Amino acid sequence: VSSDSTWEEWILYMLEGIKQTSLETIVLISDIRVLMDRYKNEMKEKLPKIYSKDLLDNLFKHPYTKIEYLENDLNKHYMTARSYLEQLCEHGFLEKHSIGRNNYYLNLPLFELFTAHPTKPL
Image 1 (cartoon, rainbow, N blue to C red):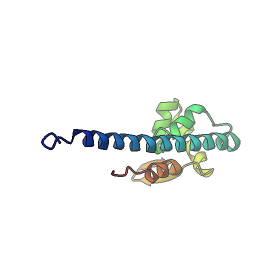
Image 2: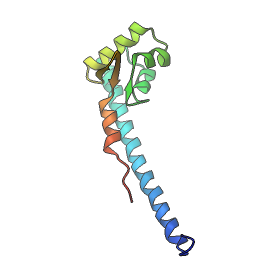
Image 3: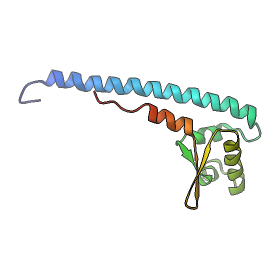
Image 4: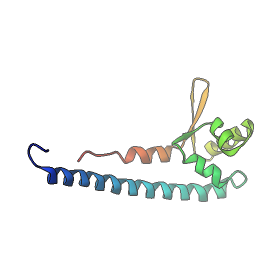
């Protein structure tokens, strides 16, 4: 760049990359918000006894969760956290996957949003 004195081209190239990444991130955030709203409304309707904003936020903190995460984040006992996750699976909000002795509860629509928005090279 410095030997060819092409600083302006390089800066424009970098700015275009920042612009594209920003636009993709805005779309991803919007899609996550739409999905969260859908989950919120459906959870309130189908699982009103367990719905809470904290539970909803936990389901969107990572594309998957575990009993231990609910225990720690929501201050719930093991059996309560397990019951919540099982009910969420029964109603289609999560998918349970066992790996070894551990159970992981996948928020598949959230996972798919991340994989549907890959970073593209310029």
